[in-house]
Length: 100
Image 1: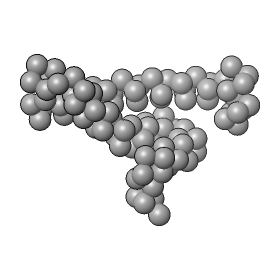
Image 2 (image 1 turned 60 degrees about the vertical axis):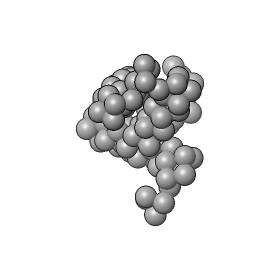
Image 3 (image 1 turned 90 degrees about the vertical axis):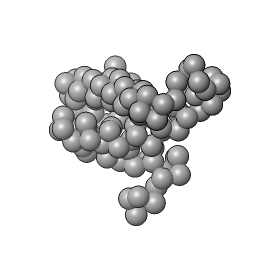
């Protein structure tokens, strides 16, 4: 835990717990929303080859994840940590132009 605190510049243990909680919530909700979008589009394992199914699922999750991460970071009062993190994620997937 001390390694995370030092690497991320966190001063208190409750901040670390909040950050890990936000990562957990964000991952679960982004997967749920992506699954909902796949169902809405009528794409499932039965009518789509598995390679294309998971490729489409990943393409839905990648842009959704950083935005949700910044949103939940804001809601839980950790925007100072999550906004730069989300911006870096967006730049790494080629969507960095959104925050210029």
